[in-house]
Image (cartoon, rainbow, N blue to C red; front, side, top):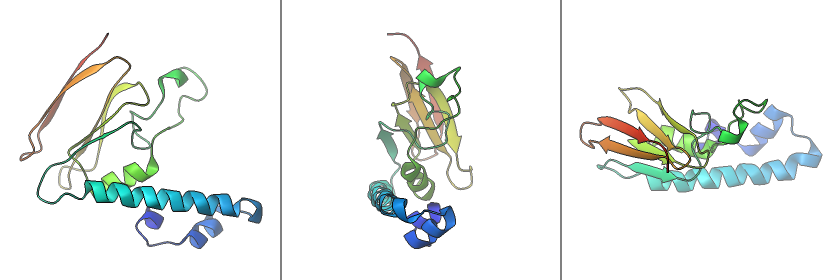
Length: 150
């Protein structure tokens, strides 16, 4: 999907790769267009030259420690991810310093990227959680303290 988002692959390439049959083709095409539109909107938001960015979103980026819903802990659905793939890819191409999300109610810290590129810090403060985040935009230093309870 990343190569589709960045324009290197077409919807036709994806329908062939995933073996999308005729009956499901239109729904798949609509979903791909929605995905690309969302990626382009997020890219526009995250493209802020010469200043550090903090991203705040309800839905977390896909495949991270903060995109698993609290209600699935201890169930067969525990490994399901609920995050946004378009958000994850946009953040990979235009990394903010930190991204704060809430939807999953999971209190966690995660990161992706490398120190040489830019490490993106991901924070989920959890259900009724509070987090104090300390960020230095110039150096990229980051720290977080979690408080729990109401």
